[in-house]
Image (cartoon, rainbow over the protein chains, first blue to last red):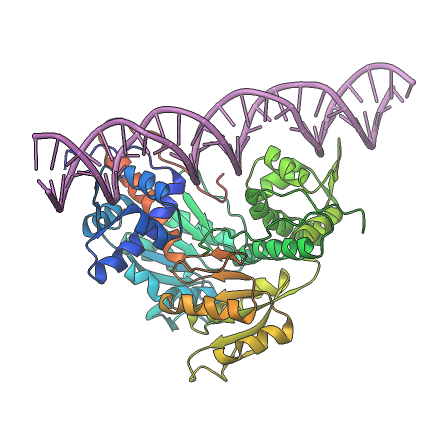
Length: 234
Length: 234
DNA sequence: GAACGTTTGTGCACGGTTTCACAAGACGTC
DNA sequence: GACGTCTTGTGAAACCGTGCACAAACGTTC
């Protein structure tokens, strides 16, 4: 225990990939794969092998040359690094379409997160049950957060209400926020914010479509139009 | 029209920010703001002014020194660059929680996307109506795609079905895919793939929480723990 | 029409990320 | 125990994205 140094900083780009490796490794473990090479893992993750090795090297030297990595051990190490050795309860603000989808999303429980509460500002929604959790009024947010020692909040409100939701979450003591509303939120220094904007993702794809079309009917030289962003392509 | 060169490549990082600028500029236009400086836009977008200027410079020299940018004109130019001068119909595969949330999400129509169809493999779901659209069987996918000339597909299935969904979409003629399932999908070269994994986003936040906690109870030197990722912080 | 304040557009340096390429180490075989 | 094969771990190079800093250009005022 005392052996654990305050770990060297892990690059943000690597942190974003570790969850992907973790899911793949967990799946492999479930089908009784006990060891895996950087190249196999890279194929499954849709990245390149050198990247996998460098990413994993930030955790420590957990591989064996000539052999590969032991799956179970790696799962444990990534879990520990990401802070997933215990479950994290999260509180969802907003019980509309998106809030309901999140509350009902099975992928959370599997991966270390539980819905610790859902709140809404609309009295008509309060009391309804979504994803097995009763919706409470936003005025109870602080109580909900304190009762379960919640540190992660999810904003699933319309854009117009997002800043209020963020303020309420911060006031309640939450220190990390995942924002699904299409609005930039301002938070005090020291609060981590993640953002997912569905329309933005589609617009990025539209840009690529647009380019493809322009390139096709385009004049002069038409280079290879294909280019896959994040994710894999065969 | 002939004046448009095959535009210089826009960096991917810039493409990812243009939709954010676009939304903000549209909002400003709606409240009768006619011109805006790079600094004002930067504040609203939660980025820095030099970045805004560099991003916009990839579209062309559309600002006026000493004055700023004309909002309406900029909206038009970004729209055009992103291919948002017309609406894009999208087809959603999967009518579960996530599919329903997406179909009912108002933020799409506002921003250039319409739900051209929803398909599901489950006969029990076929025929139900979500978000005002009737769910059809996945076997009709090709017909749906062809009928409306759809080029963007969204995968909202469980992870296990994601690859099948991707294959079906590609077979149906879709060339861009947004994947909400927690699985890496393989697609032929030339197909664009975007990925949103809710659990991954939460795990990244968990890592930051974890670090915060370790730093707090940590031994030696504790540096400023705050660090906000994507999004803004005040 | 000259002087001044403002804001854009961009050259440049810096830091982070990706990829290559290879030495070092592990295992198996003879 | 020496050799060959395999795979990791990592320096170093190439690439990309960011932010500073400043010249160029515009509008305004006198």
